[in-house]
Image 1 (cartoon, rainbow, N blue to C red):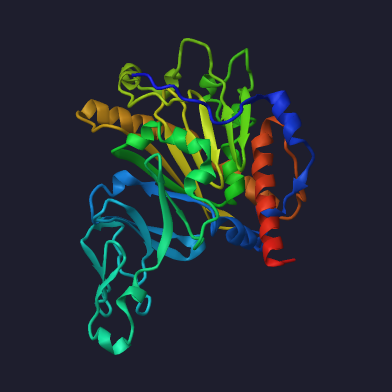
Image 2: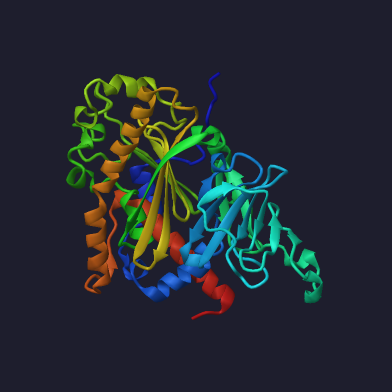
Length: 399
């Protein structure tokens, strides 16, 4: 049965969208200054919904994954409870802070501290502790410290704010309902790769928000996006929804959807025949604030890209290509891995340019950054970050 998907963004042609966003240079400081990064950490990352995983990683009660969130100096246990609910806890015993788990993932009915054997359930409750009566405490007051957690479209989001101003679904607005319809919501497995790059998270994200660089950095892979009708491969429409953004990418109308240079002989037909479902928004992607990118780029499988800051000039990227069924034979497994690595290779072409940009900006020689009309998504992210920081400053009376 075909499902009708309503585009949640009001997509505008470039001229109209550019007038909406305005023009003019911006300060380069937010791309490298440690003091500004600290403001972003407090104003944005410690109180905004962040993507950290998928429910297929914790399929059964007691299943857990551990996530290290460096900017928050936090280690998290993300656990599926006996009631099926997904919860996140600080991986720290409430006795004296010893971390409970070293494994990256696993399945346990309970979590015991290796230091003094305080034992907690999958719901975070303290179950037992040796000589507990001598602490003169109530067990109810010693549960693991919880972090706000919600699932949207099968993806797990956390928020370090003890009382988030809005739920994750409220934060994403109508995009949340559309994510529920994406293949990723039904995923049972994924192919993942990670990278670390010596660049500010915004500078790294900006690389994936514009096609201005396409013909220079990706000439080998540009056949999908470049044609006489659109020689620079610019997107055709742009959309904005609060802090979030979207763009409709150009699709080469020619008969070849995949450049021959990207496919081994005989694999193109298999790749097209073995997709796990077309994304409902062909050639459209979502840039969800602050650092989450959902890409629908057929005929390649839909993938997600999370860019988590590690500091003012370093970022960790996690890219996942999700699958909605088992790879029942070697041919399908090969096709999946080949498609994933083809995407990885394209994205890897950007590294040198992005890191060189970070070095140039951090030198202090460049005081202003300039955006052209087709870089309006970069401007929107920049302006959103500045607005969030200024609001936090006003709220906390910080100069």
